[in-house]
Length: 347
Ligand code: ADP
Ligand code: MG
Image (cartoon, rainbow, N blue to C red; front, side, top):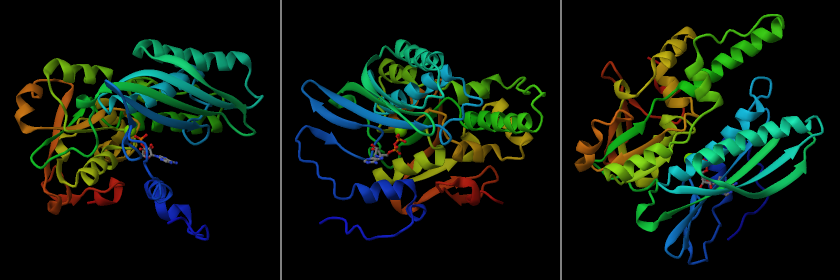
């Protein structure tokens, strides 16, 4: 079996996940050391006593970042963090990264130094070694591809597919902030384009700007799991928004979900800024993305261990697959949870 190479299907018809599924449908795993291939936050490879965890992410100028308002040092930091987040989402510890960049001669040495300062700061903070990469030229924008390698004991690795009926769905931190930070930056960019003499108005928005420009990967949560002796049954990091990640856990675990809108943790600044932009704060949390929090399920018997932990919020419970994917809105109405929550929530 193989592709017939004649399909002229538009990529937009498949979407990102449909495309990945299509392209990887004939992938064969023949190495006995390959424990997990495509489909989780990271691949898992048996390596003797420990298992190796590997993930990669590419950031493209004009698609993932805009250098008119993103300082290169922050970009370097974030490009490492987004990879480490996927390692933590496996309940593993990152150890090394390799960094590949494509650059144009529009960059001066100082600019690339800043990029690397940011990367090395993230490495230092997470105790990760930068061990290699590749450097090439680009005729358009800057491209950064980072691969992170981590390790964990076999029994500690947490996959997306382990959620069971009756489990509780929990999330760390709060959601929607990174998206609202981006809205502020885009607004000020538009104002600046109109009138370059105006200074950007970022006052009082520090928290959400930081969520967008300098996100953190939740190493502390992985440590906390060890400390309180909780092994999540499934886990994913929140890079694409709460609804999309919840659906990944549910579809891979073959379970349903009841998620409660009123439980979704949203910081007051995120909430108020969303209203300022005439956006529904819940929708920003469901569909915004880039928060890099951890979304996980736990056995109900572990509830006592997590209930007083400020960093965790229980937002739903796992149901039978036949019950489907539901969000119970604040008004008590039930809505189907969709990867793009925007339509489902229009009341
Ligand atoms: P994440 O958001 O956690 O980084 P992605 O949504 O990017 O994960 O990817 C989902 C899964 O698909 C991962 O297991 C990833 O390794 C795999 N994947 C993504 N793109 C490709 C590709 N072009 N070829 C093979 N596997 C891919
Ligand atoms: Mg991920």
